[in-house]
Image (cartoon, rainbow, N blue to C red; front, top):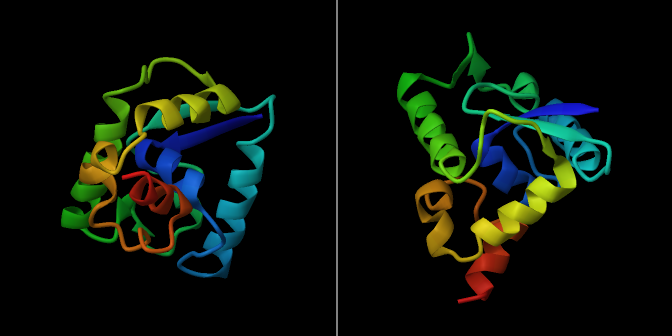
Length: 132
């Protein structure tokens, strides 16, 4: 199985616990979160709309909400992608273990997660906050 995921969504999936913009989005996110935990899943990473975005009510004409918001999202993606090789596919389990190694402190995700509307509910961000 293959998933296409935005850079910042690698962090979102680590902290996902069932919240979302609407029911369709939450169901899709739950499905992808389950698939990424399977040993036979390959992940391709990007800074463009991905398998999660396709169910997002904010995605219009391949833009997240509006041009300014979309640029901020791409910047979040690129911050993650600078730490990974985007030219290859990753075994999902190994990729998410690598994410844990790279993003292991609140400071390491500050440019990505600080202004996120979900960071108060995100288990990944909360874990990093508790590790201070």
